[in-house]
Length: 232
Image 1: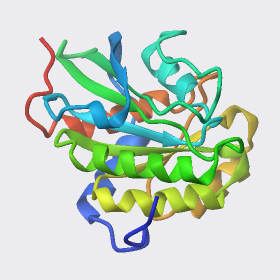
Image 2: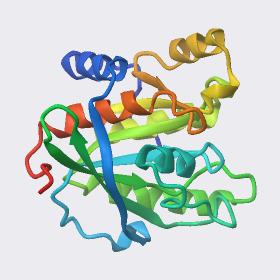
Image 3: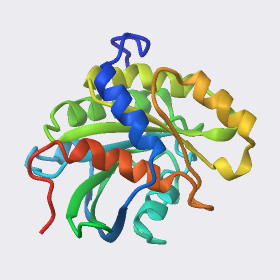
Image 4: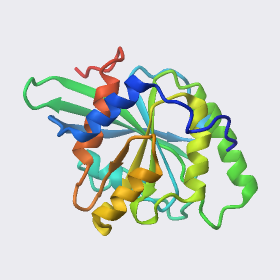
């Protein structure tokens, strides 16, 4: 995964403020259904989707599956591979939400990308993954944002910082999502936010459900600006 630009280039100010405001607000949206759409290697996907898509990036043990399950209120919707770091499959989940006050329904797609950085995976295989994901993400016309999941306990690891560099080529909103926040104190959370500036940081816990409402609200805020996302 080769970086093309710096994450410290000046971001779109309007987008950044909107993402930060959404991350701070309590969501009035709740998930009413979730289902897996498909699971296949990235090169097999066609660009035929109409719903807004949000791609989850992260190391193989960062807790992507746990977070997706917690967001969707499903224990086994997303699953962890028996051989972490070796799957090349992209999993997509359609999630339908309903607004508590207006009754409006809205659908988005969560895209679970293959994890990276697992010690047992060789460098040539990692390079192949990077190329495949480059092509997949660049051709997704309905891609509306990237979520880089990082372990809240470990601050900013070099491999995650390099992934942020790589992700800038897609010119999409990028959230930093801290996982496992139930295992850290407020001082650690503050340091995490500082380390990942200027990107908005949403701190979550699949165990305690911390931050899940804020994360859903942030996704809805961006997807509702796009055509084709209302659910029936």
